[in-house]
Length: 342
Ligand code: 5GP
Ligand code: MN
Image (tube, protein in one colour):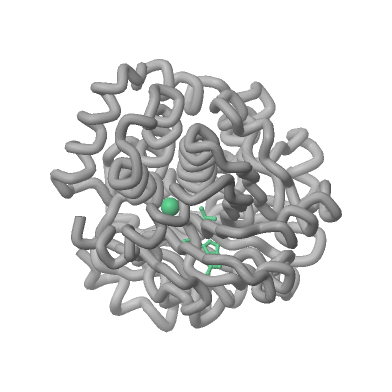
């Protein structure tokens, strides 16, 4: 509850009790389970309080999140810019969820900054930006969804229903790799206990997220592991790359490669894994690590990105082959740290 005090909760409660607000919830590019889970939970919750609410994300969310109640109302900036700009203009309270800096929504940051409304940041990434009026930012919490749950509980506990609780669970489950990381605090399990009291069906939610893939995605996974994974035991590292041709060949849909970057970490001794996706204009980079080898500093230093110590990302503006060459040079520079990592 400490954290929520920092949110100057009383002021927000007053705002939310006041009248029908025009609320906009925004989350980051390539929205994942936590981004969409926290957004949808808050969307349904604020709707129940009688406000007009919109969720805006820069680009499409993965299909495996499409079953959550209310997610279909999400406005995707890339597809519907005019409508998004209109809701920004009318916004009275803005929630920014699951990202620390407006650069992660650069497509529409320019429309958000001048909007004269209360801005509330809820996030668990390091180094929160200073654009918000109120910030709740705690890197020790499993997920933004957990923080949003605590926020909703403090505002109006009785309005958290089963659908809202399931969306929160999606965020916690996906951002902790099904409770395998970022989930060693009792509070996370206390929250999950409370979600179960709301009658969520956790096994159904797991199935909808993880047993709901297309056959194309399964074949792509086989291709990545069989033909696109390079194992570099001398650096305790591995990387996977995907070309534009691969993307076409396997009928790639947003979210299809979600989680692939984690897989090399299951090889004994590997502490660092990277995943490169060739896009039309850039190469998208995902980094993961085990233990005390921090990848967010690498994302920041080389890839104009950031993230958590064990999960970070960014991009490269040079060709895929060149990006990979540079990456191997980076491994050389970090060799001793990689060998010492535990
Ligand atoms: P992913 O590899 O799943 O795309 O991202 C993992 C984490 O890295 C995200 O939760 C986010 O914290 C961070 N991240 C990914 N891409 C970027 C980026 O382009 N910029 C920044 N600042 N962080 C990123
Ligand atoms: Mn998150």
